[in-house]
Length: 172
Ligand code: NI
Image (cartoon, rainbow, N blue to C red; front, side, top):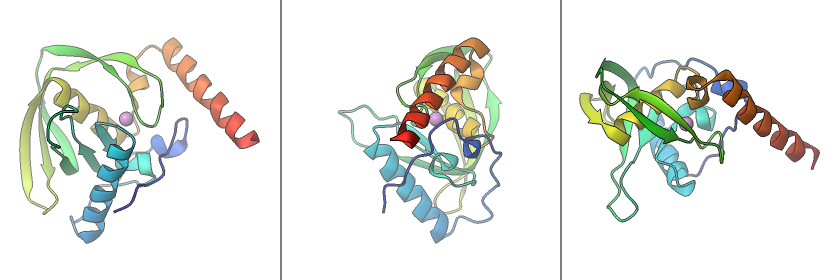
């Protein structure tokens, strides 16, 4: 396993629609394992393949609390097949937008269809933080970031700050 370098916004690689995984093979299983290792190393609760520069429909998630045993979930080709009418608002962050947070409102419960790491078709119903996290990561596969759910004013403030940091790093 390996910790992969993260793609930080703004970056065109975070704005693409990723292609479906044709088969969950060893190549995809390695990607899933590396993504989990990267996510844990960065203290994240979810990570999508475009965040490590891969245009593939793969996400990993672990919303277990700090004191709980790890509970990793690896998903290929995840699809939202149902959402509740009830909404919930959560302060979201993203490893690709470091140190920026904003409240985002999404459906409170979702049903997701996906392929697991053995290529088996599965469905899960999730609520609360896990539901939010699944929607956030699936958004990434279509080039959508959490800041795309907030006002253009707030989004532009965050993206301008990130652009400035990138320019400073390039100049250093
Ligand atoms: Ni994210």
